[in-house]
Image (cartoon, rainbow, N blue to C red; front, side):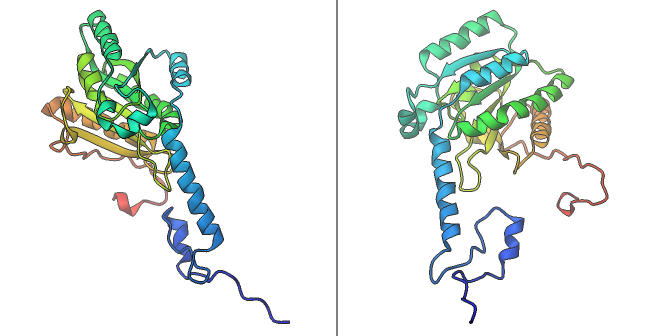
Length: 266
């Protein structure tokens, strides 16, 4: 009895799939994708959609930060709900009046200001914030304290966009601001955390005034490397009094000595 032919046609580039999460060398069944590849795509798409709509569990994050001795301030953008947030990006870039008043009162009680305002916003993936914000902050704050930087309470922003960090930094009289925010989910990364850093934050700045460190997650840029790059940007921003397109990330990435070296980093 002859053996039955496989339904899916094998792809000779299959070995490349071990080297990247990109959807390559999926094979084919006739003129279509194999069932497994099609189902995997649908699953990844569902994960990305869920990440966008997942509520921001700010209470759990605030409690975890309190255990580490970090004060938090909970604020809200001008976008009243998720539906409004997704349809009106401009409202996510500004605080609502009550939140702005809260930060002004805090600034009046701390007139000396801060070297760095630390902001966490849900962005387009609260999942990324819940998974990666705390472990990144642990590494960043450890290095910042060693440098002698003063840090603001962690400001948690509901329904926030990147630019809302500039308003927070301005109200808290901070020389610099970094906002940790969930990036737009992709089909291979629904939980990617982005960091946006600004020198002399104020309302009205555009992206040209910010430095971005993206793809902070276990499968992407490590927490330690991201913190190392952020501290480099902070030092250079203070020295040169600027950030954004005029400030390049030229931080030397520390390499652990081992028997093998990564030729990409040499």
